[in-house]
Image 1 (cartoon, rainbow, N blue to C red):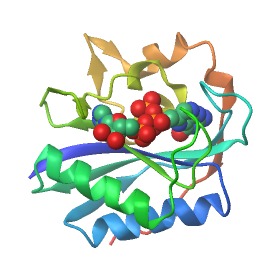
Image 2 (image 1 turned 135 degrees about the vertical axis):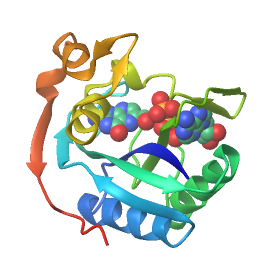
Image 3 (image 1 turned 90 degrees about the vertical axis):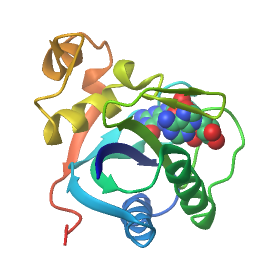
Image 4 (image 1 turned 60 degrees about the horizontal axis):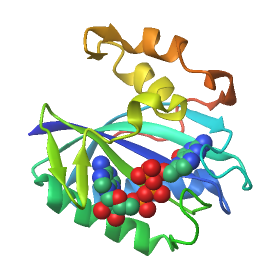
Length: 165
Ligand SMILES: Nc1ncnc2c1ncn2[C@@H]1O[C@H](COP(=O)(O)OP(=O)(O)OP(=O)(O)O)[C@@H](O)[C@H]1O
Ligand SMILES: Nc1nc2c(c(=O)[nH]1)N=C(CO)CN2
């Protein structure tokens, strides 16, 4: 089974509960949760006129192929009442596929690695917590994070918030 990394985020309602619920629903749909980062509270990136996000990154294992996984991700977002309004706008839940093993996907509806992940402190900081061995072009995550202008906008909120079974 392939190692996959997902980013999850929420900035509407009971944000922590949405994150927890997303993992429960993923695990009911052929996605095995292996490792969960702490939750960070983060300033919104892109569209600024919205509340702070809670963000985390999870390592999962799955037999699902990338597009099958995207379908599951989209259906969980739908179940959790994610509505698309403005680009990068507020949402109950957002689930992005960051990495799927070493695979590269360049389709209209799916890009892996996620196109914007390497410039997002709200992704790289939690990713570094659960996969500090990871590199991009020989550069360690900690070095990439050091170079991000908005790294101070990502604040540790809570560890051990989801029990991996
Ligand atoms: N790696 C990926 N993970 C999830 N969705 C992806 C990915 N690559 C492309 N997409 C496509 O992006 C579409 C829009 O996703 P979404 O509305 O969640 O974007 P966003 O979260 O607002 O912005 P961003 O993509 O910058 O995180 C999805 O329906 C999906 O088809
Ligand atoms: N802090 C933060 N900002 C964002 C986020 C997010 O999860 N956290 N998601 C976005 C679209 O995917 C756009 N901006």
